[in-house]
Length: 130
Image (cartoon, rainbow, N blue to C red; front, side, top):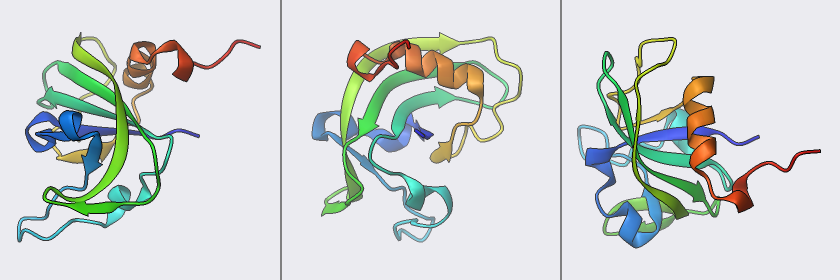
């Protein structure tokens, strides 16, 4: 099963150009590898977003994680990702407050947001009808 992870736009500088998703840093500057971050796996969907908890959600890019194995770079600990969509998709209508929206990285559980992200994926990543 694919998991969806939202990345704050401010923390995603250079991810698109480098073809990676990098783990955020804790306030003391160390790489933050606990909680949901360590569960990012190959095939997971990541998206770069901008939002505040009581406003709209702006999806800026969608990517697919390519490997479970991280590498060290000048950005820190990163996983390779294929960024398959870039643009500006604004979501105004969903059923709940975006409580985790301000986090640098979080797991997205809202099914309406997940469906919108899936619709942005190229055909090769879409589920085939049975």
